[in-house]
Image 1 (tube, one colour):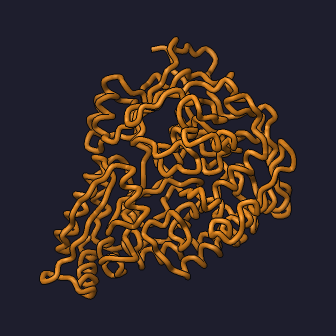
Image 2: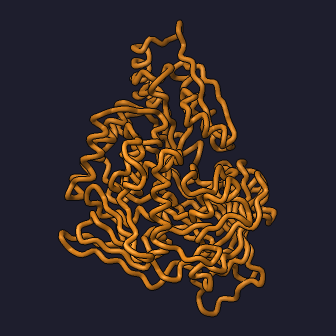
Image 3: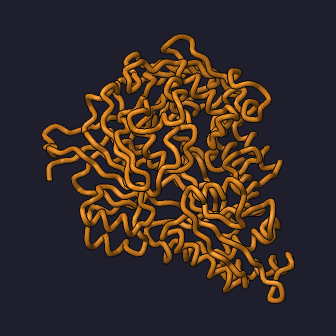
Length: 537
């Protein structure tokens, strides 16, 4: 298990960092006179409220506007944020000491009570937070009961001992709890700001505690942030302006990058990989990322409610071909939901991986016939994805595989991000494109997603045995026992096929050579603008 805090039985856990992760400019570096950066994001952010965030487009911006108890460094290890230190005697009761110079953008202090309010708000059913489950996953006392409406939010296991001391009580010991608090879901919001009215997230009104404040927002065009002069480490912030451009077409973003309009892209068209390597060497990056691209099947209605149909569709996806030919930028086939780069996971061989694609296709045909589909009654379904060239290319390839090998009639449907999210949340789909980038580096960040009560369970998969295994994993005393549980859970996913993992993510992006400080080795792709700077060029 990779954690920045070593875990020993009955030992006092203490983590304290005097240095935070800010722009680390080497001596002798000549900085550019103009410290302005343009970052591409893949879509218009759905919300800038940490409790309402859904996907990466908004999370990338939120990480600049707010700050949690801890942050991550370029290796993904936790370092101090608002908290200067944290400790636990038993991995169940955690105490965080807040730095006394942490302030909101209006100059008022960030206090332990701000975290109490924000975490209670996160789990409050009235908030309808898509990430409320994260508090339950972390095991905060009463989190699930509050989410279920059984007890009130003020019963959450979090309290302010004093202005600068936050105490968190868990249902059971969790050695890596501190690392979970790096998630945007646990970022604090200012109560007075949130309750000031529905426009509180607009430029000039949003009061965060991050390194930047929102200066300008033009929907579907740009979001501009500038340094928060009240940020506790503002003296080390180098970039004076960061502009986020929402562009959902990789080719359009890449074109603007090549034209000099963008400094960092979130991705690039896979079919341009070799050309980009040749044309702009040293600017193309594809390190492994803690993420899996997958298709989710509707397990509650329609033809995919039959597990035989789901398994047949999953088996017929040629993952090797997808990774090597359709994508071809270092991706690996996903034989499990949990990616290989995940700390503490040693996967058992997948039966799919040990079979040829021809063998998989033959078994898939048998399964589909058993489910009642064939040439006289072809399977018909809709494959939904959010607007993106890469998503479209993958959907076309998969639909072709299903048609060729199973005779499935597939209707491809693309939707803009917000509409797609609505379809996903309401279960209005047969098969839907999805992806998951881990919120922390441990297998449960992936596998917990398919538990019955998880709000991120897109396929509405329900399996009591699976739920029990995931609960058991949190109570194991050894990494070996947890790994065995995780492999048992993966086996159920393979057999029941609520999802079809397709490939493991690489962190493909383009970065201008004069941009320094981007944490390209962070497996979760956590990139704070405050760590970056521009050298003279």
